[in-house]
Length: 415
Image (tube, rainbow, N blue to C red):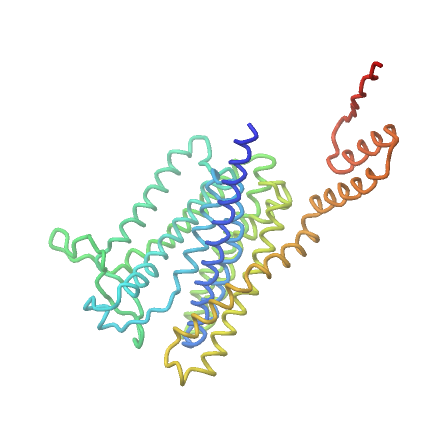
């Protein structure tokens, strides 16, 4: 039994370490994409930066849930959404001619495919989150079959978009969107004598997916009772803010902001709210062991923000100082990545200790009580006083409904 428990602890520790590594890797990718957007001066950069920053709450909460509740799909969904934001805005360092003739490097071809495919994956994951929160399963009842059908159609669209024959991207040096062949476009370009439209036609269906998600969230909220309704209320409010912010972006874009500089900032900010809403639900209604999750989420968010700021500052600063010497961003990015990797563990330990002290009060107070009891126990010889002290410490740390102390007395030795 002890050996099995030890193996389980080792597996859990390895899983936690693996989740931490992938979280740091995703943060580095998001920081690299953000630095490329800042350096290129791309229109609408502010909204894109907000979406890249959204990686922190999504992947932060998702990573902790996956490490502690791997069988609950909510953690995996949040983690997936965070990664789609991180890789969905990677810079395309290839010309339109290279992409149209399939002569670009395999890495650039993969980036083009990912940036296009992540759009549909993001909306599909939002739909899955709306249909399965907070239990991680579809609601039981007459709407279950309809929910399963809608999710099946949504994910079928995701699969089709992966093999669509045409991609629509904005490559390096282009002044607008261009159509290029999909390197893994297994679908035929013509069906029944008709040419398939651009992938933008499929993208037009994505708002309907978002509407279906909001309807599903509203229906789930209406049918929920007691604690589940309180948990759903926060996520429903965050989805409602997205439903308001996206049309508002269209209005701003059509009336005041043809260049798209600020049109999509409200929508980008709204997309950061669902993981925050889940955090509030966890914090207020004791979902998924709240104290540890909130503490770890805040800790990872602070660490990621520090490392991302360090990375972007180094990239921008070194590029400005050494750009004429290196003639490329690759050495600058490599040096910045090594520096961020070197300071990761020291920063994480210090930040997590400070956050645990402030937010994980139950664990902090329990550790303090146990330490104080151990100090008193070294000098105490009266069993009555020891038993009373044990009862007091256990009651203060755990608040049990009943408590009793049994002390085994040794038998007197016979001459």
